Image (spheres, rainbow, N blue to C red):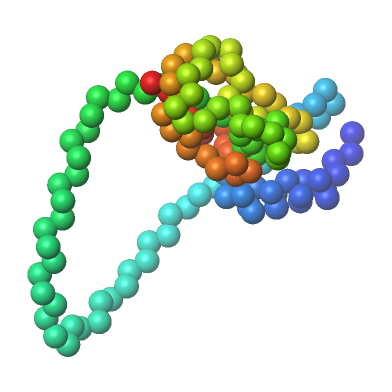
Length: 147
């Protein structure tokens, strides 16, 4: 089997352009997996000397006490593009405040030109949709929170 280097280069560009760290594609004949190593860069910037002393900043508000998080998550089962509705002019599958039950279609993740309906594995009320329509998503990324 001959490997199409143009195809690999296109996948690498998708990986880079969408700030992804890994992409895996496979069919019955071939499997391709690309992974980008992330290395941290430490940058130090010297502060310029102050000409005049600034007034002391007002004390920052204390962070809110963490509340018990009883929210369940709906995560992306694949890398792709998130869509809230089956077509641009259609009504979204769900909106914040909607009550869903296990098995309801909540969104679509497009991967390799295939529209994959994502079913809820939980029941409850949608309290937050974490991804904008048309935004790329990664495997395991939280799409929605349900209470």
